[in-house]
Image (tube, rainbow over all chains, first blue to last red; front, side, top):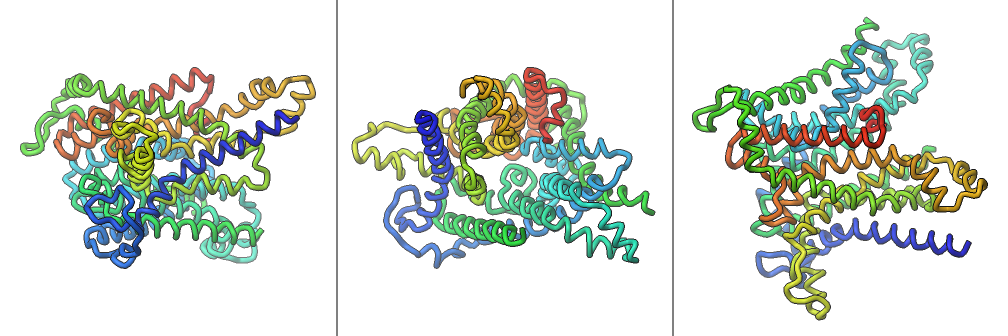
Length: 261
Length: 283
């Protein structure tokens, strides 16, 4: 028994080591946002400063890149959530011809390597002489997030009791009224989760975007472009702020979910 | 009207997937058989030699990618399985806290995370620079621009995708089954090997699938951590497409990569005795 307990303790310690390993680059990112660097390079610690928080938007093309990322993520998330929820409803609630093929397509979109997806989209745009800009980025981001929204919404729809909708219709609700007042509130957690995933995937994407961006630069693309000349501390500050906002939203969500149940 | 509803609901997504997933694959297949250049344009010549040429030039990088992806996947499995086991069986009420901690890195951009990792590993950076200052490491010690850095970066970046599916599979294992095995005089090790491990295999399968494919095709880790002697196929495809504008070579390479990955997955599924790859992966 003593041996088993020691084993458990070792496993516990090991898990924490892995967690610390996974989080260490976050600590570095936050730390170097406060680095009072003197030269171009920001890789050695040279003292504490809050300067970069005050000068957060002083690098104009970095600010533009961040704004592009936010706009693209917002627009593509809205499109993805609308059409993905529709398909999730169709797959979870209805039986129809082509359902198997649709499931396969959804799976294929998830399992295609990002690199191949980006390359094939570029092949399409080059073949069709489509100019590459924010629109082609949005199209691509909808494509790779769509399946994730479909899967999360479908999972929620499947657990829904169809008699609720029937009851609403029996009470004289229109099809749209039933959807808005009964179905949508019931599947909302799935829709929200899918939307958050789509937003996160979009704002984080480098690989697909690098193929279809034309001259439009997003946050991840700007960072990769700046690696050779040195990452300015503002990038770390922006990363830190995005990290904090994301964690706050996630924690808030978890607390709200606990209160509801 | 009611009978049309599912088709109307599915239509926008069908169109999106058809126009931007299926058609581009056909476009890429077509481009991979064309000849020409970016200035004069490309023409279809059914030039299958694009494939042999591309492979002749870049087989090293393709094999290296598969090797690095494979090594990282094995490392993730070895590192991640005990973590998934701990969270599923030993974490008790703290399960969701540990899962949240595992997902923490995903609140930071993939690219930025990899760059921070680069900071951490840099020769005179916060870690090795300090250790060298204390005389604990020789002055010429370095990790960046080595195989170890790239495989380590891949392992780091995709590890949660290995842990989560294994955790989900282990979570479903009924503890009473393990108790039953022990009541039947199985040792702890035997109970794990004969009961828990086989029941967790679908999770292992999903984890390997979710990590091997993106790790093999990832261009970021090699670009940021690898230096010039560790380029992977993803970097080549990016350069051919975006810098050299050699679309036929790049398309041929992309297709080859996808074919190799699909064949790999198929063989792996066969070896594991999984009847249906799609089903196991979708679970």
